[in-house]
Amino acid sequence: MEVSKKYRFGTLATEIVMVVIALLFLIPFYFLFVNSVKTFGDLLTNAASWPKSFEWHNYAKAWDMTNFPTAFKNSLIVTVFSNLLLALFSAMAAYRMVRHNSRFNRFLFAVFVAAMVIPFQSIMIPLVKVMSSLGLMNSIPGLIVSYLGFGVPLSVFLFHGFVKSIPLEIEEAARVDGTNTYGTFFRIVLPLLKPMFVTVIILNTLWIWNDYLLPSLVLQSADLRTIPIATFAFFGQFTKQWDLALPALVLGILPVIIFFLAMQKYIVEGITQGAVKG
Image 1 (cartoon, rainbow, N blue to C red):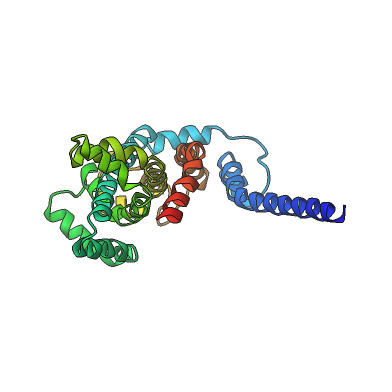
Image 2 (image 1 turned 90 degrees about the horizontal axis):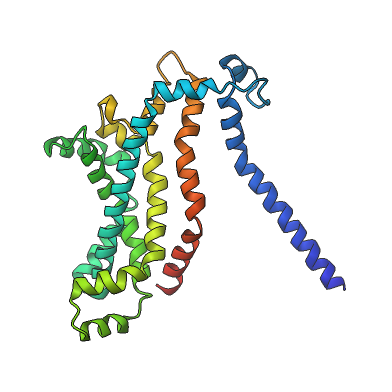
């Protein structure tokens, strides 16, 4: 009986702690939302208070001033194409490195892992020079190519561990049936990589959708701005339009929050399988 009471008490204490932690994580979202529907004066007076009146026209102004449909379209194009190419190329590269465990492939994998620790700030100037020489500056394709270069190391690292969990006998049986290397990968291996494929897409979506620094370096035209760049337009040297910037932030993060909540179960599944079995 005493053991049962201790167990119930421990479970209750754990749940209380988890609720408190969840509330702490939700506090920034509270401040973001309640201040997005305040007047500028109320926002500066008391940022933590509940709105006296909901100023929904802040969202209409932010929508128009950021040209949100265009910014959303640009962010969506960059995120979708970067994700698909990153996941596909990284899966193919990791599969080749695992199944052909040569000295060169082991060295190449070590290079990918080492590239994960290179600070982005250290290669900003070389990146701009290379992109300019290739004629990729101020273009959506140029930004996508940049994300491929910076996103491949982590994606290859995640796929590399997961590919090891796939039994080699399945591929050997496919080759006996006359399937070539590409057929084996796309028909047999790629479907088995679905958990990690989705995981890589989710992680890269959170990064690419919210990224500001790389698009600000590559894109200059107003009609090519992604959502983070469009939102930054509310902050100038002498003015900071928080009453419009916060609604723009809400509009920008809402799609990725919905996407994350719908797909989050694949993150734990993919990373766990890749880490444990790899």
